[in-house]
Image (cartoon, rainbow, N blue to C red):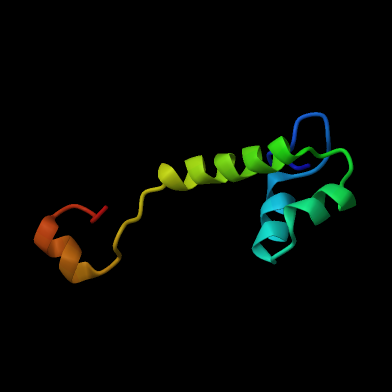
Amino acid sequence: MVGKPIVKGTRITVELILRQLGQGVAIKDILVNYPHLEKEDIFAAIEYAARLVEEESVYSLDPQEYDQAKTPVR
């Protein structure tokens, strides 16, 4: 899957699961559409995404803030 994280033992990407959830597809419907998935797989995909966001750093590109702090704002 071109290096994308997948649910172990499947070719179902974490991205696919998250997109479906983001579009409002119910967990029960995802499980029906992808019978190889289990509820725990969906929760694991959400946890994976949460950990990625948790470690993400955001830097300001506002030159005034940069000049005042002398370092990027986190």
